[in-house]
Amino acid sequence: MTKRIVQAVAAAALLSAAGCVKEISSDERLERETTRADAMKTSTAEELTKLKCDDVNAELAKARDESRSEEQRLNSYVDLYLKVKERTAKFDEAITRNPDLAYQEGSEEITGAREGCIQSQADVRLDLENLVREVMQMPTVDEIKGGSTVKVARMSFDTLRDAIETLELDDKEALFTKLSNAEKALETKPPPGGKRRREK
Image 1 (tube, rainbow, N blue to C red):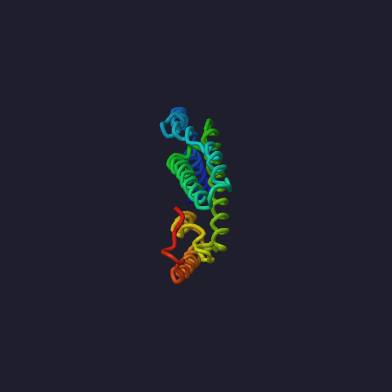
Image 2 (image 1 turned 120 degrees about the horizontal axis):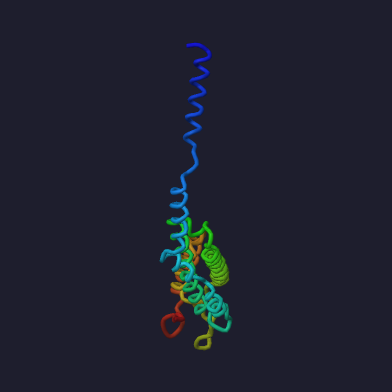
């Protein structure tokens, strides 16, 4: 095979390859744009635009109210955290299924609402964890009963366990052990006149 033929074959192959990288047709482009536009018209998109976390602030203020008992506040934080976490998960699931919901024109409302929920979840989690760790520093307190001082649970240990489990803390096993030890210590020294009473 002569050099000239080899060059001709190479040139033909190059042109053929270049021809494969053609631009998409008008029909294909229109179909893609229509698919993207349709993403914002779906019931999922409509549902996500209504799924905001703006209402969290009032409930968060209630959970932060120090005039309420620690146990009431802890329960409020847990309920609120689970609610916000569920909403954030719905955003993530919908966007994973259809990324156009987050990346196409007109999706700013959805991405803004999602960011708001992510921030609310982080705020509630921080407050909840701070309260859990504060209580865990001293899970039992002194209380006067029948003229004598006795150790009692600062709050329901079950409530504390639920909060620790909900937060999925890295050191949850150590915290559970500390709670179990505190519980055993109280059981070995029951208050005079009956069983230890837990706050509900």
